[in-house]
Length: 291
Ligand SMILES: Nc1nc2c(c(=O)[nH]1)N[C@@H](CN(C=O)c1ccc(C(=O)N[C@@H](CCC(=O)O)C(=O)O)cc1)CN2
Image (tube, rainbow, N blue to C red; front, side, top):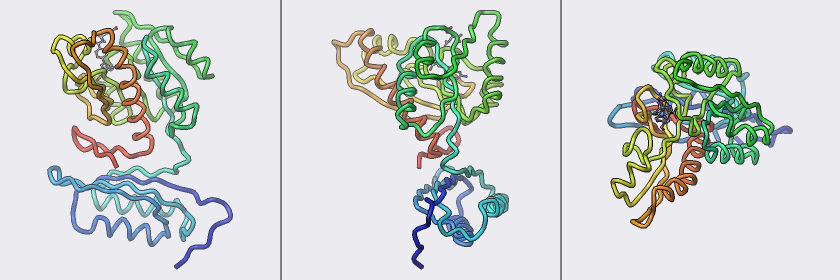
């Protein structure tokens, strides 16, 4: 049945979910969408043979919707409860609110701010927080609030409580650690599970922890890399979202590695933030599915 072009552009929504894999998953979800007149414009899915989990992401709009969005949402909640489904459903126009954390190095922060300013990041950066003053001018140049929360040996817990209060107070959907060199506590990692992304300056699982480029140099690697991953209480062990690499050779010093690293770190982090904010990343145990 041809659908006439609507006056105003249709409103788009994105649905992503995971559930135990079984016959009929697609039929049941798409049947619900059809019954509501949801016009699917993009869909991708994956069945994991190891975890026996099913993953799906679809974009649909309301050009032919026969029920209110709230009714579709109610029916989806009912279906989800019968299928052990974890799902996220939201209007595409509701962009995730992002708080960026940084210490001294601004290369990842700068790339995120430039992409955000250009409209290339499907998110709203609401503020930047730092334990140093180094990046204040860059952030205020972009017209964003800068929250300076210094850390000392005896205020780590209070400082992190201030960071968490900022996340809650600003209704933050995603915390991005853009070379923020403080380890988050187990409690904060639990509270931010699946909504805090870190950039580690190595090709994980190689060279975890501090000074990865020095470790790489000593090992004599021929490729350096950067890894964007969800933050967990196990340092540098979180589910990987995006990785970038660059070949090097024996002539490359540690100092040159650090400079080459700026580009690959910024690229990997921006990619991971975009994928997360487009609701393309679904956790699959210690791994991720990117749809
Ligand atoms: N809970 C987690 N917190 C953080 C992670 C993480 O994976 N889980 N990643 C780090 C970033 N990072 C490596 O990518 C990293 C940062 C800092 C350190 C470290 O040893 N920090 C020292 C203090 C350093 C300083 O004050 O300059 C420490 O916190 O004692 C290791 C790895 C971000 N947080």
